[in-house]
Length: 324
Image (tube, rainbow, N blue to C red; front, side, top):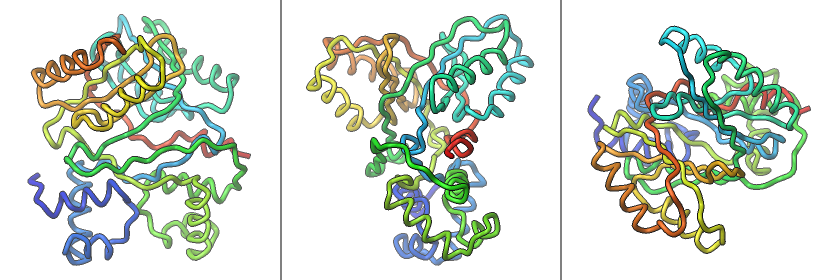
């Protein structure tokens, strides 16, 4: 599919706020409401927009995020597909990536406490059974995404504020779940799924935004539609002072190839970064530049190629079930 300037303008708007009304998006892009709706539907149909989502402050819901890397061994394609299908249905698992390199899979896992985490990890490992070669579980300290770089747009960085757990009722949780699955769902459609008027739902959403339970709204864009490959680099810190770490994070934000970073509480490695490149030559150039600038601060522990994203970044069921 050919993407023109008006499509790019719509994508930029969605990255900053994927819940913008059609009329507002049309006015900003000099398009009619009907043409705006048609273009958005086409971008979704062609998988250029993967999903529109609300970014939820999971800290406020009492949940912590973990990255689980799994190495599968002695396994054929059919068994691997069966394992992945089962993982996709697990109530604690969010995003799943199929990798090439040392690791076969990476999962985002959410849990309220150590007991719940242990139960989920045991269940996940049991799904893999005798095919587990090695695994690594890393608790997430902080993360930032820069998906705007896929289309060379200005950044819209959504930060999760640190906050105490809040108690929400079932209605609020269902609103959050539906917005997380599709941030462009209308008030009327929300009202059809929830026993509450459209105006009542609108008031609740405004309060969830004010209380920073909803941090923002954005779109996930398919990087492959723009000719990019996604590589992950695992970095181990050599210096732990704030000045050097801030320099490193500033580089992540400003470098045109880095689309996210995760920082962990872990001794295995300290950062995962995602980079977009057109080919292996660009990857080599990036790695050489990173080493040249930060060889005294970090070392590259490992790297991998993301072959496929099995699920989007929608939060798992458990986040919306256990906040009582």
